[in-house]
Length: 310
Image 1 (cartoon, one colour):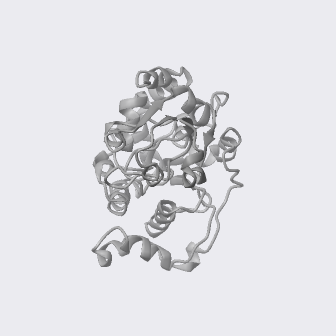
Image 2 (cartoon, helix red, strand yellow; image 1 turned 90 degrees about the horizontal axis):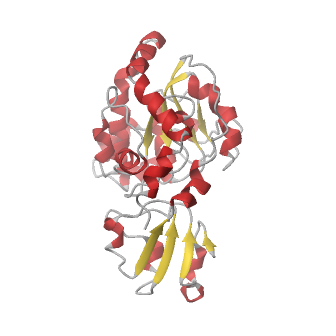
Image 3 (cartoon, helix red, strand yellow; image 1 turned 120 degrees about the vertical axis):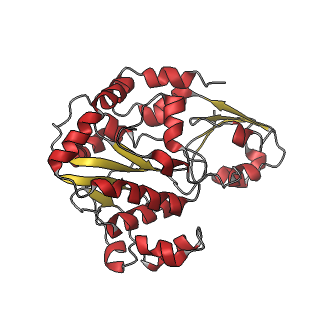
């Protein structure tokens, strides 16, 4: 069966597309009306598209000519199996507030890294940014999403001093089974992992393996992703959220700039606490941490996902 991967050049020659094909990655994201640039190119053509992320009725009603088939084992193979042999992690030893790992340079990662640095949460020993760009690009990104730029600009770092630097831990793209050993100390020494999900400027949840870095090291995480991403992994994957600590109202904010600023301000109340106080708060969520850890290694999440196969 033909497998189509990003950057989806096959959609530029639609007459050569087979009736049924597998579609990998993030589909280049969805706009606020749940329209997709690649699917729009298909017009009224009939296709069966096998996907590894759940596609719900918000998208299906836009494309009645397309049959989306979710395959849980497809996602297991692509995203979810990487850490199955990683079952011993360093002891939690809080020395740092936030860790975050930013690989490719799409807009949402530029925004996240810039915001983290503006809030003084980007500590180079615990955060990565494997790309460079001009600081004034941040201004353009913000202007593209919000009208009140004079307000929102205050929460981002525009300096070339930061944006034109690479901060890396030897990131090897897609080799997650190896990268976990590179990042395990950053994860277990940080109170919170801000997961940098792919294309957080999209408007429909897309789930990869990135949050599992925290699950398998028994850590706390929040994700800068698409709207309702956290609700999505709870509903479809069965993972639990850390509701005793974090206010997830930011998760439902559709605008990506507003959602990011709300996430940053929500976690700011934890930033001045001591490592001992972070540890005390962590203990409040210890049951949830253990549930998520066992939920992954037992593959119960896969049982949950299979309920939504069609």
